[in-house]
Length: 281
Image (cartoon, rainbow, N blue to C red):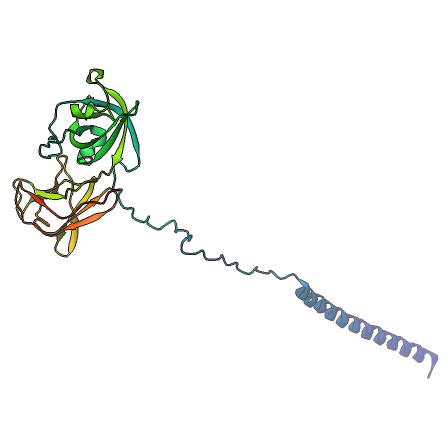
């Protein structure tokens, strides 16, 4: 072979070697790029969702009420302004009375009774309540509320029978600063019920008489249920549609004691005795 042909052949071999090298490098570069992306996918931080936390369920006595829940019904309070244990301040005055008046009670031989101011009378809720009245000097008397003392009587004021006032001070004083509170006195009397004049099985009014503690509610048995009757300013509980007239009667005092009286005949204007009385408190 001539030198010229060997030189050409060597050049061709060199060119082929270079092309092969370039191809290998290109393939290596492509593999390297793929490897790099795969590695990136592997080492890229994953988004980790924290495990859900569980709030411990409170006990039934401490479980919170959802904000959308309706409030639980609250029973109406039994006592009004003359609440057991509460002490009131005012003045004592006096007027001639035989125990009759706005409460609709009969005349009483007991002079220890009084009229209550409008605010504390509360539309007859004070009727029949016994209150202990104390003067600043220590003298005291227990009186039964039988009447309403209208204006100019002030909040806290009691207008006493003159003989009851005498237990506190001299009448020439006119009025005496006092404090007073509800009491539950001893008694041997029993409760009576009275149907109002004009009562029948179609309409009736019921009055409670001779109760030791103030009456807070009166219900009548109407069919299979108890129906609470509204109280009037003249101290009767009315069944305007006749519901329960002549049926069993349940009376509840301000302490929550509930007494059930068996059915009594509708005898308008007549007091009908029972064998029941509220407990002394």
